[in-house]
Image (cartoon, rainbow, N blue to C red; front, side):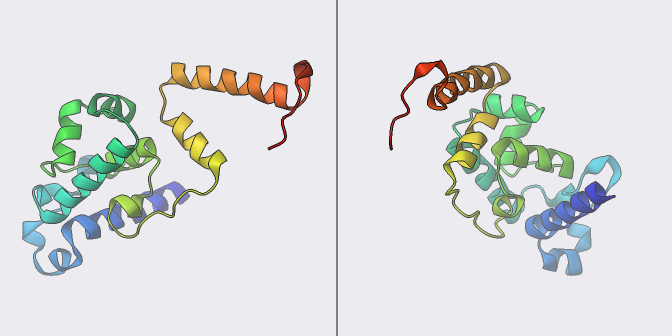
Length: 164
């Protein structure tokens, strides 16, 4: 039940952000919504807000140093779909939006233009986020390397712990 509430909340924020509250109230015919198949942006493709959403997704992807190909692979969608989303040319489901948020390690409200995400000040969280964006094979290499370093810093293997 909690997961459903979370998805409904995300869906509501997505609808209001992309199509606008006025559109929902006054011009429902122009921006139709359907829960069938999970589509929530229906005929809003090409709207200014959808274009802005696509631009924010593109910028966040680039900030994360992800190509469209890698981004698409991690999100489980096609490169063409990524291109159309970033160009504001296609609708997306809440499920796909949630995947994009996860892959980008972003805040849904940030992508929707609601508020800027607070800068990460915790280097551990920042590093963890960077590791999550890697491919599984790359993650394994980084984790193994970190384990060796941490074992050494914890006094195992006879290393001296440097004072920082």
